[in-house]
Image 1 (cartoon, rainbow over the protein chains, first blue to last red):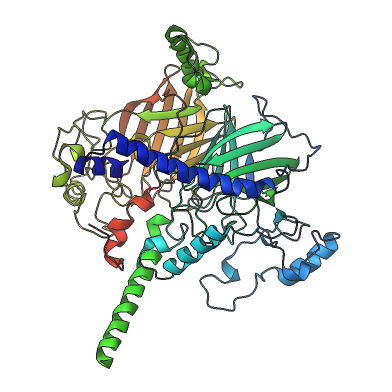
Image 2 (image 1 turned 120 degrees about the vertical axis):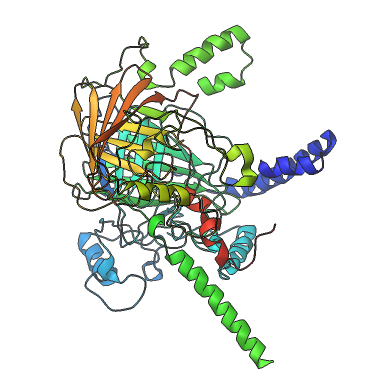
Length: 348
Length: 285
């Protein structure tokens, strides 16, 4: 809006000018929507989570009571590994555990000089017999990107490699936000669910607090964009269903820890639907469906089991307050550039 | 229904009535229409503090008496000016020890350094650092309380500030932090929160009022109507002050249609300030 007022001050736009701008914007918007919708129409019916017979306890005001600390560490990746192609589930616990023993990071390992070796990672894996977190498409892979999105992803990633500014780092490194929806991450994945009449609060130890109204209100206006989107929720039986819109396009370099969406995908057109299905006193099956016909040729869904962890105490995550890494990294890039320029100069 | 109503062409009179109904439905307290002076209660009989609250004062500029003042950034003119306000401190003045007052004055001079970088001598709010307690309460942002019989959460709109306040099992602060370690209990209709375990990095306001890591804050939230609370914070810090002192202010329930906290993720908003000198290409002017 600031830009709009700024332009108007410099050169007032005629009424007709404004209408034609609006019209052309509308045409673009319609063409953006129509084309992928056709593609989507060929896709399968919308995902619905498997029902559960479990009946959770109630809050004093009658909602299903999911309060407490949950965790969702997992050895299962978003996408199914190629050596498990065609196998959607492990046959039994023993097969899962055998696979996990080989594939889980070894917490005793202190080898390697990466940012964090396994010594630092607090692992509390939740058992999951699925061989990928993605359950739809059934092959356990992200659906193909639209050609436009593929091109855009390439551009975003190649630009980000310049590390020209903080905008080329993912939001977590900037201490702004993790991704919504959140995938397993190496550490600090404790998540507090708090409830009050008309509200559900989801507190991630790392940075984000999602406050979900349940009173049937509409989403915030289109011009307000959030790193974690704007959620509104409702109870369908014992399942908490949360619809989230209004993501900012600046959320686009997730990639790293906790990211369910590959790097280079702007979130702006995401329509996220989440289902929190309590299946036992200690387990919630969490499903997230992302629909963005401008990015993917079909909607896709992942399933992440959450397990209650009463011993987990969420602590303060003062990330930005101690974030010297970002400045040091950027400064390092500029030093390297200056040195390279000096070498070029000397070589002349 | 309330949202649909906005788009309908209902006659204006009916619209006004509906608007009042919808406004009344905006807060749980009013679901059964309570007289203004009656405190809403949860099923366990405690005052129901659930909702979105905000202070409406200028304490964040300066807890003590302060007149209007010019912006520290000349080009922001009246937009950045200091808004005047009377002291929220009981007795008017903060009882600094003679040797600690100079540090407050130095803080005040340095609060807005007017230069790029991560200026640690500046007001922590300039850097978007966590605000601490009680400052989180009177920042110019709303905050939301979620209440259960055993725990309260307070989520502040500012940055990622939030607090878990257990009511049933007090626990000693296990470490130092920006927001401190909170333990809550009910004393009659007053929620009392005892906060310890602070670091020495936060300030009480933009005027440089400060504390050490010996800070101990006792907050009291006392509802006086469905829409108002009295907020008191007693501040103890023998390293900096000669005696405990207290601030008092009303908190107001926000009743705007569909009121909710919006994102104010200020780490993003200070990146140009903190990191601008390391940009590869200067931003377009």
